Image 1 (tube, rainbow, N blue to C red):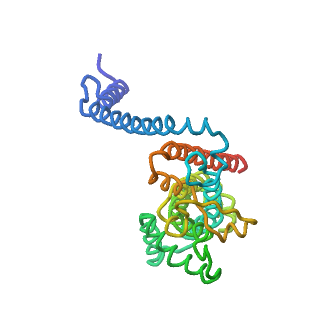
Image 2 (cartoon, rainbow, N blue to C red):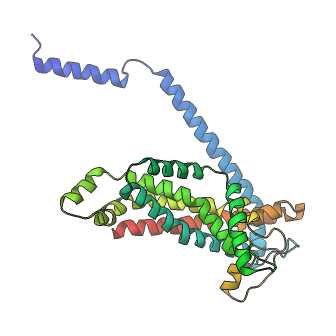
Image 3 (tube, helix red, strand yellow):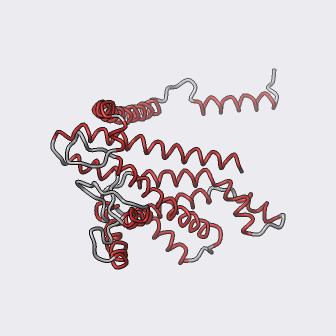
Length: 317
């Protein structure tokens, strides 16, 4: 029986499908590549698991023995009395600076660059500069904070034990450090919004502000929140910039009577506390691991709160 055009088409389609699927032959290159990827994944997860096990095994006994006393006690020269209460407070206040300053500025700058600014040489130059700033080592931002914020605040506060090396200087430095990351991630989220959404909104007579507020931002919100979470996580773990702009390394048993005094005074943070204790004698080894456990837990809680707010924002829109 002669093959009909329909049967010929089916036969050709089946041949193409079998060719694409590699039927009848084994693609050893693909199998080998997948095996290498799986091996790299296992090695990465293995190293991460090993580090977490070492940290929690060595840090949990201190937390179980001292309980909440370790979480509320100030820094001290004796390991049995030293705690991370002031470090937790300082880290959370630094993150408040990051959220209040860098997030509105970064998201606003990204909206302007992506939705309002024309595609000119100046705009492309600004984008290039921002991307380069995101790759600058954090110690450079610490030097910037030392040269700008510490000096400026020192002139305002005047001579004293804290002078310009205050929590305000540290918070401003951390906010500037993550600002390029916030701009880049927010711009990428806005760029990922399909152009058809903007065209449809403009087609029904919406203004540019209405398009951005009611259509572009809700669609890009998950990506923007993801970028801000990642930037906050980076700021939470930075040590070198804080040391340069006044974070206390060593004993720090100062009580402030008001929030204003705390903002203008010396401070410490969890990463700097871990760094300080790691340089001390072996008697502080358990405290070091316990502080790392607290750092990981606090970071996870902050990220969980940010993810919750992101999901709630998505449901709202």
